[in-house]
Image (cartoon, rainbow, N blue to C red; front, side, top):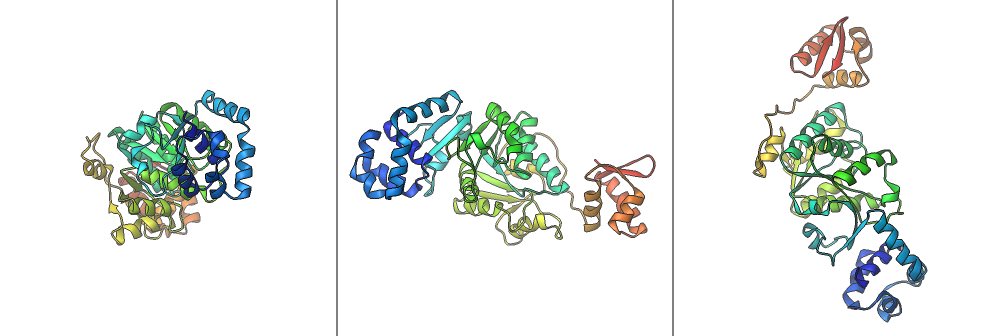
Amino acid sequence: MKEIEKLLVLFSICEIANKKQEIIIEQLGELSVDQALNSNIILENLSTEEYQKVVKNYGKQNFESMLTNMENSGIEIVTIFSDKYPKSLIDLDDRPLILYAKGDMSLCTEKCFGVVGTRVPSNYGRIITERFAKNLAQSGLVIVSGLCYGIDAIAHKATLDVGGKTIAVIASGFNNIYPATNTNLADEIAKNGLILSEYPPSFKAKPYTFPRRNRIVAGLCNGILIPEAGLKSGTVYTKDFALDYGKDVFAIPGNIDSKTSELTNQLIRYGHAECVLASDDIIEFYGLNKISKEKNVQFVSLDEQTIINLLENGQQDFDFLHENSKIPVNILNSCLTTMEIRGLIRKLPGKMFALI
């Protein structure tokens, strides 16, 4: 590892702002870390507190030991000076100067596509995210997301289920996966895909690191798909970054009464995203091979969404649905019949109903 790259690792551990790092590395040239820490360049660009923090964390033997431990843990350090640094990020004004990686870095050279959205999807959102992610992965796209609850995790899992490749960009270090419940998923992605972070292994996620993470997701991808998201979702950041970077943005329309479809419906309404009803729309857009025929997304009424919500925890009988939905008997009968015909639910013996 070059001396300048070691310095970037040191700066990342000490949480030195990217802009300061850029200014310093442009002036340092080929100085060693020891020489750099004793140069006026460092002293002039860091506060006294920052400088003391950097020196404290350097302690040469401990620092070298830390680099060795990362290597032994399967963590690859990729800086802007490395040939492996993603070309899709190199020209961004707010590019990360360093990436910590676990997995196959070559995936960044393939056609990447983001699938992002709400952390609390409806049943509709879960179904269409899984369907789209599987078909897009099978068409050859590398699916990129942020390893969070909801749409992120569904997209990663669906991709792995069909043997596809996925990249997870995380808002923490590898030793503090957020959320912790996705640690096993992270391990699987590291083995069969790629995990990226701009934060050192021990770093814990903070509120500001999630939107920072989202800029990397947007930067890596040719385009992003938003299956479901609300107006206050962190997905707004990813969408904004994607539009700023000139990337393609796609959205799936949803129930107009659903909070989790407010962002997607608004993006489509104002022409900020391409409306897609099937994964083939995206596959054709990029000139990829279709894998299989797919039905268009099925829209549901407010009554139908209420029924779906009641069936999410398992099969229920007619009386339960009537009592808890407050839908009049005649309308409930009609909804159930229509939903069965459309393949949304199935009717079981004893007037029981369940989701497909």
